[in-house]
Image (cartoon, rainbow, N blue to C red; front, side, top):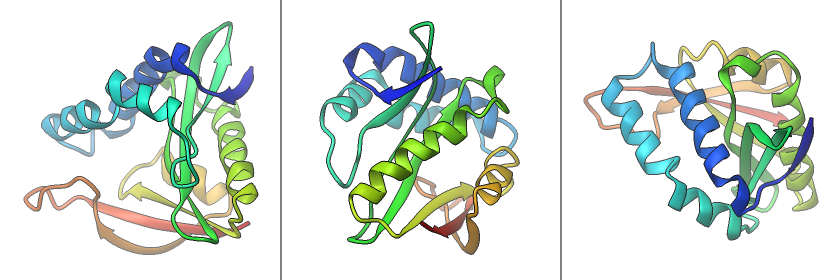
Length: 167
């Protein structure tokens, strides 16, 4: 297993991992229409290509887990202010959970954010996400508050849980 920064060769693999991971995580929480909208807006190859070729402090680019040249995990984050980083995305191929891949991706993103000056780290997890919540809690993230879900229309009333940890 190799953890590295993604480049344009990895776009299709990132799209597949994020799409499959999103479906696996949210099929019992979100409506089919909502899932399809998020995937169309965030995990399309044109957006991912832009995100692997244009990194900054606010978006550090994608880190990927590669095994035999296949993307089996992808994640990324950025700085939300001078001292706080955030995990924006972290997905694995659904059949690759519980192997430590997510932990390695989180470590790579965390190291990058510490280099940018982060002393705390945030993540949003959908209420009811029993894949993400235990993972982040095991990594020291503590629940802070609930808020309306990002990218949600008001009729869905999806709730996001905000978590934070000190670095």
